[in-house]
Length: 250
Image 1 (spheres, one colour):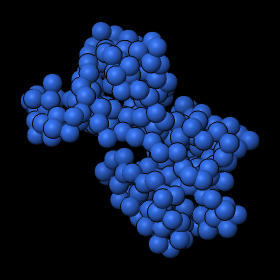
Image 2 (cartoon, helix red, strand yellow):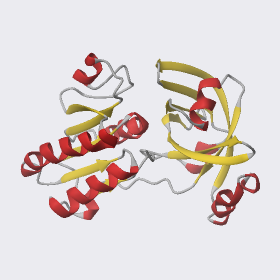
Image 3 (cartoon, helix red, strand yellow):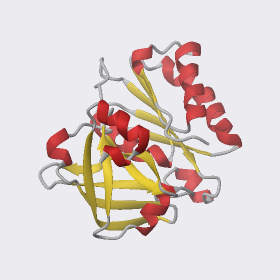
Image 4 (cartoon, helix red, strand yellow):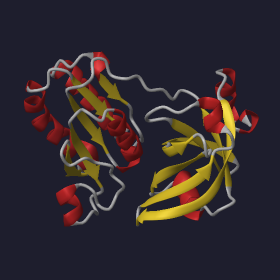
C-alpha cells in the first residue's frame, strides 16, 4: 500500500511501518461538529498491540494525491478487532470522508511512530491543554493515569453556546471523573492567544502545590510550541515531565 501513498508512504515503508485496511461498520453523530466512526481493524490490533493514546495514520485522496492525518484510537478491542475514531468536523479531506462514511466503506491506515511512556514518577497532578481534535487522546491519557487529579484547559469553538463554555463539554464525549478532573473551557480567540493567556495565568499557582507535575499539551502547533516553552523555560518543569505535540496547523 505504501507505493500508492507518495513519498510519505515510501518513507514510512523504509521505516518498517505497517499497513492495514479498515472497514466502517457504523457511525454516530456526537454533535453537529463531531462524529464517531466505528471500524474493524483488518488484523491491526493483533499485529501491533495497544497502548494509551495510540494513533494511526489514515490515508485520504484528493485531486489524485494522497493525504495522511493521524487519529487516536477510541475503545480498541484486540479480541474483537474493532475500535472507533472521532473526528472534529471542519473543512478538509478527513472531515469530508467522515461525514460521508457508511458501513462497508474502507480506508487504508499506517501504524508508525505511536508510543506511550508512563510518566516516572507517577504524577501528583496532571496539567493538560487540549481541544476537540485531541479529545480522544486526552480521554486515553486520563484513563491511563487514573489516580492523578487533573486540571484541563480545553479550547472550545467560538461558535459554542454559553452553556458549552460554562462546563466545557459542549456535548463532546469527555470521559471525566468530576472528583478528580477540573475542566476549564476557553473559547478560541485570536488564533489561540486567549488560551495561552489563560494557561499562563492559572498554571503557576497550580504548580506550587504539585511536587511531581506532568504537563500534556495537544492543541494547534503554534500554541503548543508557545505553551511548551512557557512550562519548560519560564516555570522550570523538567523536559521529561512535559509532553507536547501539535495536533493541527491554523
